[in-house]
Image 1 (cartoon, one colour):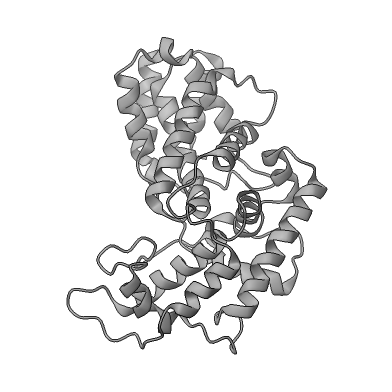
Image 2: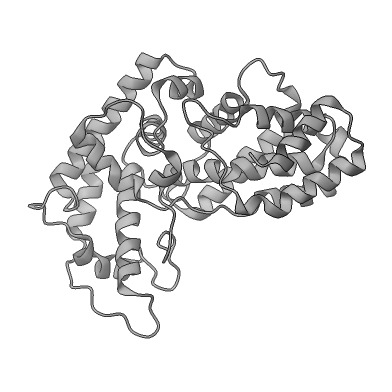
Length: 329
């Protein structure tokens, strides 16, 4: 953690820094934060707790700047979990905004009886489990339905793109990410969330159990069922994991375009240069089944997407209200 951040947080603890100097330091943090890679808050031994608690204390004393920084540090992780749950970026943005509004209104109730990470992401998890269905979820996909839809999508060679299209490899990547993301919708919400946390983001059974408020054994069992159901489908259908399967991303891309699943002018997932989930989530500490782990690598290779500036939109909300009285901070 940069020294300027530690200094700001220590100042909040000690109360020795006057408000003007504190504000200046936080604003300085804000100018450099996009250059920083925040440590994985879902790691088994996360290093973010002390910094988070320091920021929470500043927020509870009325600091808008500390609130904005706290949201900025976690919004990308919450957004990426939401994206795997709802598939469509716009729905993930809506879910993330709703979660952060809950954080804003409930932050005054945090008393440090649990890790802040547990408090924050349990709130996110509960919202994602109980929110109304998004557009991609509305169809209530099963693996059987999804397999039939893939079979009905005509095969065609991915021809060279014309001048109005992105590069063919980006279209192929868009089709692959979109299709494998859609597979997750065939899991029920709890299975999907457990798989997203445990298999894609590498959350251990200890952390997963804390976030879902269940036993470690229950988390492992739920993860095993989700892995089995998803991997059985991929083993029987997906050419990425079994060469004899007929379904190939390159053959389906043109069909996805014709059916409206891929829009060449508005790519939702593919980027020319991306950070992959595996790069930020880190390695699992326990030994995984080699076959299942290979399947999960397909989802770990998906982009770790940048999130919209939720901190900025919440800042605008705060500026329209009485910050202290409206949120009991």
